[in-house]
Amino acid sequence: MKTKLLAASAIAASLVLVAGCGNSEASDSKKEESKKTETTAKHEDHLDYHDQKSWQFEAGDTQSPINIETAKTTKMEDKGTIELNYNQKVTDEVDNGHSIQVDDGGTALINGRNFELNQFHFHAESEHTMNGKHYPIEAHFVNESQDSRLAVIAVFFKEGKANPAFETILSNIKKGEKTTVSEPINVAALLPTNKTYYHYLGSLTTPPLSENVEWYVMANPVEVSKEQIAEFNKYYDGNNRKVQPLHDRPVLKHTD
Ligand SMILES: [Zn+2]
Image (cartoon, rainbow, N blue to C red; front, side, top):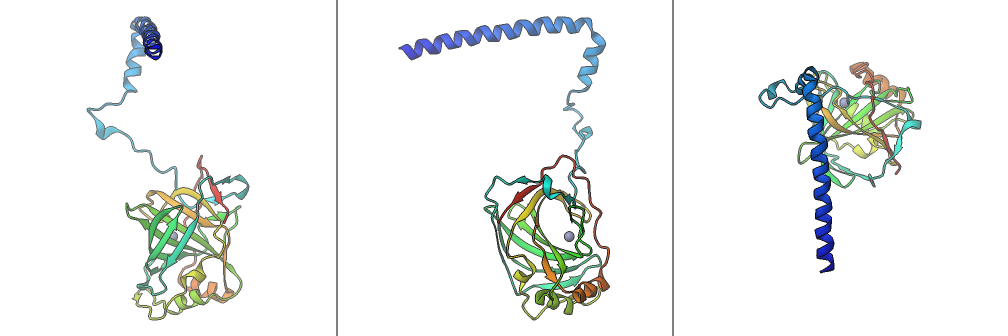
């Protein structure tokens, strides 16, 4: 009984509040009547549901690549673990006119969600920059979820020891052609063991530049030799899109 009474008085109180709001609204609308020009201007700001074709799309402010300023990144709150299980037996390798692309399969578990690898390809020099610095090459592993969301894992290549997996890719390039690759490629050698990364929401870096692409830029680069960089540059040198403005996007850091 006591709770019922309390509930009843609460309803009564809210009725008074509602009535209060109604009263003030009434006096507001009276004020507005006297300012007719202002009222007309306000109406133009309202959504016109009879002319939905004129509604504007907001796009172009979340493009890739970006410069990652490591000191301005935020610690990722999610667990964020990445587990990759990419196939060593690749489908084919193609010189598609804007990069060397390896069509491959396999799985990626990213922050608890399932993706499948579509392909990976390379840019020279790197598209993303770290504190304003380019690396000689950047690899992009393009992963897709069941609902077609794209998650690209970016790996920087720096000059160092020769990379056997990159060697297999270089030795199979046929200029402007698609080739079948008979040898297995140890794709894991193209990825850093420590998977600390920077994450942000961006876009494809080639047309149609679609947004809402998840980026995972690996903090640790992989080594390839000076000769391998020079060999890749024979095919592509300058297939990197310019760094785009970050605007107010957060860049998160996940530490492996
Ligand atoms: Zn790319």
